[in-house]
Image 1: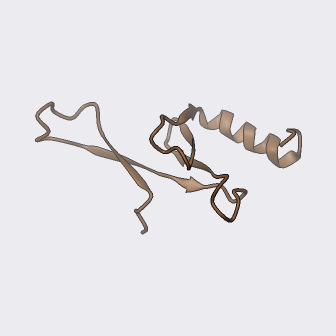
Image 2: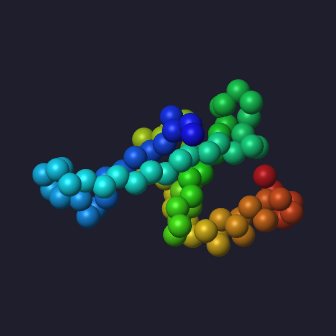
Length: 85
């Protein structure tokens, strides 16, 4: 399994001293519609309760977080041509 694009985060339930830590990962995937040169890229990472969306050129900024159902609706609208993209 390729994990180079994995974003690890320490659980808020981990101890303050860092001795008993749990880390969770979100694996970012680049959109198949992004440009081949990598200049206009959207990346997404799924979790059970949220979908994270970010610009691959600005990975340090916080991602947009939306509900999985909202993401499915957005993708459906894009695929159907109902959005002027």
